[in-house]
Length: 316
Image (tube, rainbow, N blue to C red):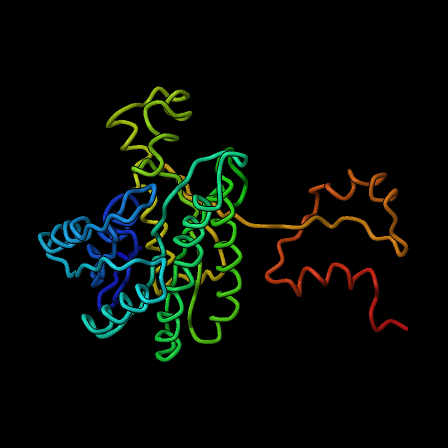
């Protein structure tokens, strides 16, 4: 297979001053894309600190390798910041073909220990950040009839994770946002997909670091752990979703440590009773939850088709 290139393409990568975003930016630039490297430069736990140096360092790294890049330190969590970074990308490079919504913060608190002041910033950065950045980018992509948007979900949002109610809620919202934007954008040549990454970064060090479950299970530590679980093992899947040859739309890829799989939401065939009762649900709960012959709907209309098959609409 010939090398997949991004020559002539322009990408905006948020949260690209380190970790996953940095690897996404480096890979895209190494394959010919001009990259706007966005990073607020605040701590992974959030905060008011603002440091443009992380984004600038990645830009310097790209340029030293012969690539093309520029730095931006606007916040994704405000409409003004998002509008500014998209406008700056268009001014600097004249186009915008790819958006990687990667910026994120984390608040690891059990449900009874988290308050609204800790919960809200997570929603602001992850959910509102995706919306704020995607909106002006989407409008440009619609005008030219082409675009690729890659959002960042998480296994925490898809499957749940102890102590991460805020983070999981945000990442689950991104899954739904991705599915809907993909449906709406397909008519304009815009494909929208998501990545559910697992990687050792500053943000995940407490979970995936030397004292984490994977380190304990495998015995890997230090550089060996970084080589196996580093963000460089996720970036290829993101770059594929961002490439013009990728025909996937509305999908989520789970990527970690060199493993890539499809993550999806399905629905069981369940049961049908014309006069459903509480007792019949209780009696037949095993049938309801039986995963044999489950369905993965492309949209809510296909889910409703499961009901229509029982109702025989139009039959005489």
